[in-house]
Amino acid sequence: MNKILMNNEKNLFSEQEKIEFSKNDTLLMEMDHIQKQFFLVVLDNVCVTLNFLAYDVDFSFHIKLGKNSHLTINALFIEGSFHIDTSLEGESANFSCNYSMIAGKDSHNTIEVYHHQSNTISHLRNHGFSINKSAIVLDVSSTIFKDASKCISHQDNQIIEQQNSLSQINPNLYIDNYDVDASHSAYVGEFKENELFYLMSRGISMKDAKYLLLKAFLLGNLSLETDMKEKYEKKLTDFLSKEV
Amino acid sequence: MNFSIENLNVNSKDQKEILKDFSLTVKPGEVHVIMGPNGTGKSTLSKVIMGSNDYIVHHGDIKINQESILSLDTCERSRKGIFLAMQSPISIEGVTNSEFLRTALSSKQGSNVGIYPFIQMMETAMKDLKMDDSMMHRSINQDFSGGERKKNEILQMKILKPNFIILDELDSGLDVDSLKIVCDNIQQYLKENPTTSVLIITHYTRILDYLHPDFVHIMEKGKIVKTGDFTLAKQIEKNGFSCVIEVSEDNVNE
Ligand SMILES: Nc1ncnc2c1ncn2[C@@H]1O[C@H](COP(=O)(O)OP(=O)(O)OP(=O)(O)O)[C@@H](O)[C@H]1O
Ligand SMILES: [Mg+2]
Image (tube, each protein chain N blue to C red):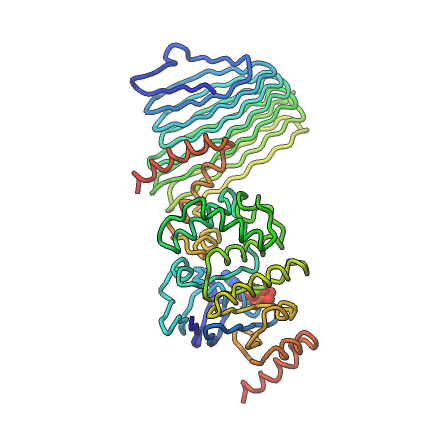
């Protein structure tokens, strides 16, 4: 797997802001304190997984997917914000966006997908955790154009907050074709009482129970291999230990 | 442990009166059974003992060895040795059984349990219960069948080693063979831990063929209305609650 590190001093990608994938690849991008805009193209029949581990990053991503291509994004953002728009330009292009974010400051995110062609698929899973009273906003929209039939487009959006915050989810489906399979769901609320009760009934403290649920919520949302999961978990634990 | 409930009155948050003047004393090593019609408050009782926030205790007390536990939260009650095998165990996506139980055991022991001894302990316990090894690494109860969830409760019991066990309809969802396996495990546990007491909530006597009760209580409308032995349970199974409850209501009115 290729690895790209980016921060203020070191920016390997400073010139090259457009990435084109012409063969299958898995990439880890670790980013720290930067503001960045990227263009990405996945060519026909290519399968790519992008793992993002970002700390205090303001990131915009413009993506085009070719015919039969497959892109999976597993992004954990700690603070910062994420803007992504993806155009499914080739038939049967398949896009999975697994985005988890945890923020102690306000954070505005936009996730947009455009189905231009038939048989295209998108799954958007956005999970946010608001620390203290920070407001996380998720603007999520899926658009299916008139000529794109037999598309599948699903959104699962959730924000967990500790206290009433001003967090909100704005899920949108714009569909201009009759023959589609589409859905969206949105949940903003606290940890589920019955889950906390079950864990605590086995002797686990409230704090540890919440940590287990938080980890499941943020990391379980991403489809990561074990070693990668450990890396993400470490980043999350380091951050939380400083927060508490 | 000496466990007692004294004149407990409990409402739901929306002010529905569920337990009314409920009292019960369980001594070390005793097996008690509560039977009663649907909706009479049996599961509520079990959750209130465990410290659920869904209910408000507005009168009475729950004590372990003469000390009130009402001010303790759920995890502290568990660490005191109370274990509730729930009627409908929920699933929790993303938290694996092993991670969950290792955290629980570490909390109870007050120090981190090493992975290797823990896995060994789990493997042995799962083998005893004829559970598949893979369940260790699956999310808690996620996609488990009804019976598998019940077995998973008893797995947790075996690992956490409580001394007051509440079994809320353990027998529902378990097939005949699984019920035997699970009860054999509980029996074995009680043999090794003879001061452990059990409170069994059930609608059927089959489970009582394995776990022989010292007392059988009939609960109706939030309180115990009659107490007897195993024969009372047999009588209820045969004839229903109606005769027992009518008689006791007369007694109450006197
Ligand atoms: N949190 C709650 N809020 C409101 N009502 C509740 C709550 N929990 C229980 N109840 C009500 O209290 C009554 C007792 O419920 P409970 O689950 O304790 O019955 P049970 O005796 O366990 O019944 P079963 O034999 O069917 O399991 C029921 O009428 C139920 O609807
Ligand atoms: Mg019940």
